[in-house]
Image 1 (cartoon, rainbow, N blue to C red):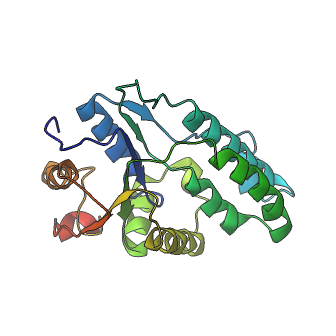
Image 2 (cartoon, rainbow, N blue to C red):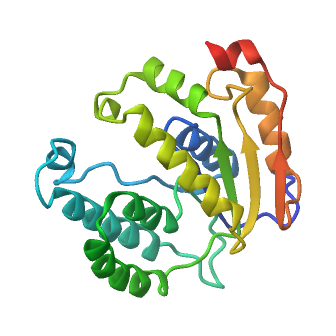
Length: 221
């Protein structure tokens, strides 16, 4: 990774749950000796949200909004800084979920704060969008069996995937690499990881697509 051409200083990895974004962000940060910023997981309203309590959806979403803003606002990306930053989320991700979860009235209030916060934040130089089919992500969810993800049902997962697809189909704010991970498993297979890293190491301008063949057996495991 040391020979990257015009190395981006701010790289963000995105995609739906269990697509591998946190793993890839960690690996990139290690190889680039970069500051790694991980998406906030703690949220005092999340339990009530999963339990379906009244008002908890807006509270949980707004708490995530503030935390994500604070994390990205603190990045040191000034002209004099030589620091490289790798995150496993972009700020726009918050609004993507807000549009899925909030009522129209709640969204109207949310948007006023979102727009104010967004104007104060830097934009990534490169976004790596990891995608996979609903079937693959469902299998990975079952395999991981994380306690906090048991509330993610198939219908909601498919809505999230569609929202991501729509968002990145129109995304032009940064250079964008779209990686289809349905046939690879770079989390558990080193050869798949090395193939992906070779692609990320090449110069990326505009929107580029990467459709690795990988191992269908690994993806189906």
